[in-house]
Image 1 (cartoon, rainbow, N blue to C red):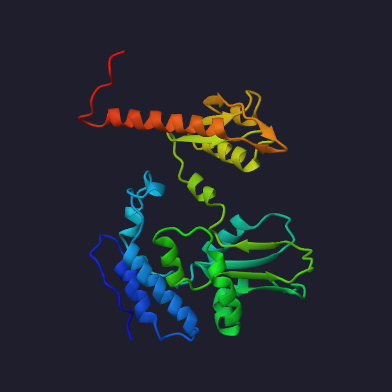
Image 2 (cartoon, rainbow, N blue to C red):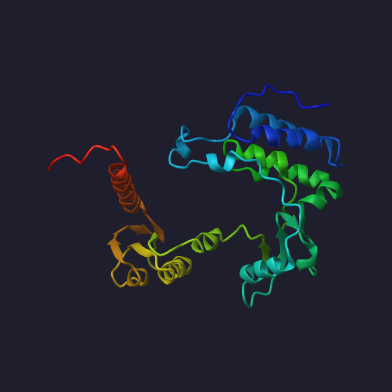
Length: 290
């Protein structure tokens, strides 16, 4: 039996994803409740579509180039060299931890080290738990969606195939950290690799100055990009590498810093950039005479 829904013409790939969910019905051993949830999510995706610049949250973010194409599932394992490079980049030197590794969104047991997990702790994959402990998966399924996003949440619900499940029983102490390696976290590292000479990075950091931000600033300089720093002092380590430093004074209470002034400054910079870009467009009106 196929999913029934009223399909509307669109310029995105939602019909392809919808058909993929419909075609998979009855081909897996997943429980009926999960098949039903996937079908409902597919109908939701088909009805609401993906966000556009008409949606307030995406006014300045055009996801059209991403949603216009239906991407196939990455079922083919990547070359071992690529996996080794991922592990080298994601592994924290000197960290003694349990590691659960996912490659292309799939649990990779041969790369994981979860032996020795203490009693009362369950660290496993979604794919294996769907068959082995469907009641656990059902109890956790809807709890994972805290911030629904138009289109994308429904797509993820409809096609989710694997993921990490960590359950710690009350009063259980885990002595060693549990490290999740997916290649999805630390996304700024992938973005930094795209920096080129002539690009501009805006970095924001206040005392005690996050090491991740300082490292990103150093990386931008190494790649020839210019750095605009929003910070609290000319003695700030962030200001040392900046082409332009904008000093912001923010009040704080018990370590919680107000970011009102910072947000106002960032918004002013954005508006000024948008105004300049508009003036640079062919046919744009010249600026008013002062």
